[in-house]
Image 1 (cartoon, rainbow, N blue to C red):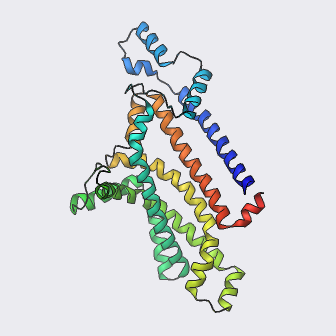
Image 2 (cartoon, one colour):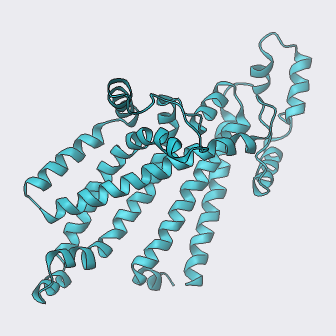
Length: 315
C-alpha cells in the first residue's frame, strides 16, 4: 500500500509541475502588454517602463517562473495588476461559490447516472432501456449554458420558483443552495447523460460474467445480484469517467456562472482576461488544474479500495 500511494503521489507532483510550466509559457507568449492595458495608450514610455519594473515584468521569464512557483508553494499567488490586492484573497472569496457549485453538480450527476444506468441495464432492450438511452442521447447534445437558459425561462420567468440569477450567500444555507440548484442542474445534465451510458455498458458487461451466472444458480434474487455483486465490479470504469467529468464540470461552471450572474471564479477570470491581469489568470488556471489532478489522485485510491487486485498488481 505505501508503494502504491507513493507512485500515485509522485505522478501527481510531476503532473502539477508540467502543468505549471505549460500555463506559465502559454500566458507568456500571449500578445498584449499588461502595463499598457493598465495605463492606456496615452501612457509615456517612462511610465510604462516604471510600471513594468514595479510589476516585475522586466525580469527574465525563468526568474519570474521560479519566483511564481516558490510563491505557490507558500500559498502566495502574487498581486493582482488590476485590483492591487493579493490574488489569493480574490480567489478565496469566489471559491465559496464555484467549488460548492461543481461538487453539487457532481453529486447530481452521480445520482442520476447510477440510477438511470442501472435501471437501463436491468431492463436491457426493453422499453425502459430504450427510453433512458434516448434521453441520454438528447442530454449529450445539449450545451450546458443553453440548458441553463431554458431552466431560467421555465423555473424563474414562467413559474417564479427561483431567482433568475445572483447568489444569496451562505449566511442562509437554504437560500444559498437554492441559488445554486438551477446552475448545478444545467451543469449536471450533460455529464449525467454521458455517465449514464458508461454505467449501463459497465453493468451489462459484468452481468455477462461467470460469477453472475453462479450467483443466479445459487438462487440469489436479481436485486441481490445487482446491488451486492454487479455494482462494485462495474464501478471502476464509472469512477474513471466521473473523475474526468469533474474537470469538465469545473470548466463548465465558469461559463454557467456567466449565465446565472454568479460571482464565482468564472466572472473573476473573465474580468482578468479583459484587463490582461496575468497573475489572476495564472492562479485560477493552476488552481483548477490542481483540483482536477487531486480528484484523479483520489480516483486512483478508490480503485484500490474497490478492487484490491489493482493495488497488488501495481506493487
